[in-house]
Image (cartoon, rainbow, N blue to C red; front, side):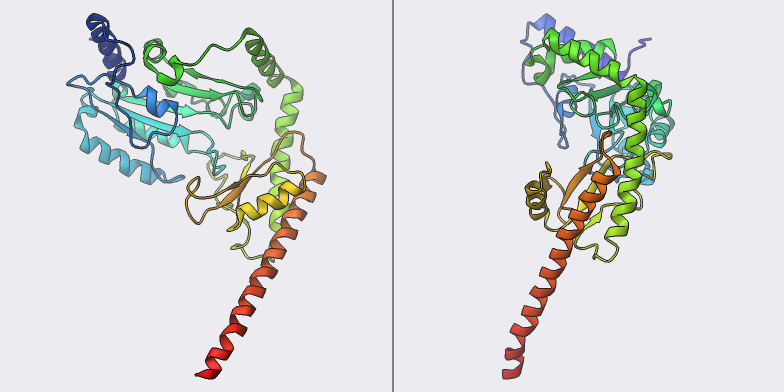
Length: 349
């Protein structure tokens, strides 16, 4: 009996079929998920259309809701019985820390449910550690290492453009999946190798992440995050949340097991206006609007860094408050004009 998973078996078969037929590597037998959003979702799911291969990509479930994930997982298994028999692969792709919301994924609960319901050869869990690498775990190895989950997932994506402060990234996975992706992954196949000097720089960055100084920076980030939340809430308590607020503030770190995320989505119905206000003051702010985020959740993201100080955060919050107070005044003036403008019409009636 083969020791390979359903995914690996299908990849090996596809590789062998193409080799025998002499088919070019970039043929058109690629199946994409409707919800594909990154290189994994597209190229990782590039599996030959063998008769016994079907696949379901599950990446849409309510954040924080383990119950919602469990419900959708059961439905998937009912709709695709081949998963339970080991002929199909179920992909579960999550971010350990969600970049737009700044929330922690309930990873252990999700992994536990997959292990409970899905045969081991039919499950493939992928975790994107882009926003946790460098911040959590021993020597900044990420949340999977922080929580001891690294051996219970199948593939992990690490991005070097965030806390590593460089370029590129890496995927850790099995040898068979690596072989398949290196031959048929479109974005991978047409990407040049990093120069040696870049590899040396990345190694240097990782060496720095393992130093006592880096440990202190990680502690400072956590302290500054707590200070930001406290000072922001105190400074905006007299301002309507319809003008400015931290999205999901009550639940943002509920899955963090005492950890805090440095990403704070600041809701405002005028994100571009706030962006321009902050740009003029020297901040690299960027407003996020639909379709980048759902309607009604327009925002700017505040990201706390290891070198930030209480004085910097206090000044930043004061500037947020000053802008928000102007919006309150403008809103009040607009409402007053509407009332005044409506009075003559009522008088004529």
